[in-house]
Image (cartoon, rainbow, N blue to C red; front, side):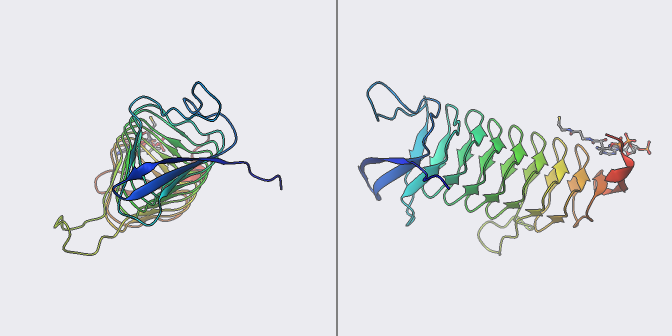
Amino acid sequence: MAERKTWRRLFPASKYGPLTIEFGDEPLDYRVGPGKGKWVPPPGFTFVPHDTKAKIITIGTGCRIRPGATVFYGVKIGDRTKTGHNVFIREACVIGTDCLIGTGSIIENDVRIGNGTRIQSAVYLPTGTRIGNGVFIGPMTVFTNDRYMDYGKRDLKAPVVEDDVRIGANCTILPGVRLRKGCWIGAGSVVTKDTEPSWIYAGNPAVKLRKTSEVAL
Ligand SMILES: CC(C)(COP(=O)(O)OP(=O)(O)OC[C@H]1O[C@@H](n2cnc3c(N)ncnc32)[C@H](O)[C@@H]1OP(=O)(O)O)[C@@H](O)C(=O)NCCC(=O)NCCS
């Protein structure tokens, strides 16, 4: 395997110490400004120092991080992943390769997203959410992790989304729900229970409609 070339930029010491940003070896939008090796963040791009041990942000080769992004310490973004504008990605999130993170999406801390997953605009992923590979999440969809809404008093249970799941626009996924491999969720659904693999669900509460194999694509 070819040796991966990266370069680093050390930002000046902040309250929490210095921050290193590590990039892949291909141009990133707005990455290279006038003067060799000089990195110019896109307009409105903010790195948030947080009191975490990981004082590094890793952005892969061929990524495109559009203006207005806010990225916290400890975030890892895989090769060729692209974001829309004004995305917000909190500390310790790991996002795979070839993903899209839509404009205005909010990804809270410790979220994991696999490879080739497409997240449309204004999606909310709370702390601890797990998303697999090849998943589609429609715009304005909200995941939740706090069943009784008593902030800070109970264990949070984030949803888990297995590979190849498709979620329509404007859905709500309740805490701890597991969307099993290849299921589809209709637009506007409220998913209150785990799903079976390769079935279509829709409604509030979401119920089984038919198998995905019955839909000719
Ligand atoms: C769920 C979905 C895939 C089902 O498609 P389908 O298999 O062709 O389903 P049909 O249109 O034949 O509908 C079957 C039944 O389910 C109902 N239904 C379909 N989608 C529904 C939804 N999202 N919520 C509630 N009921 C729904 C239909 O009204 C119909 O009910 P009926 O049998 O009483 O008439 C599709 O309706 C859907 O919601 N797609 C998501 C689109 C989307 O959000 N895309 C995001 C990118 S923009």
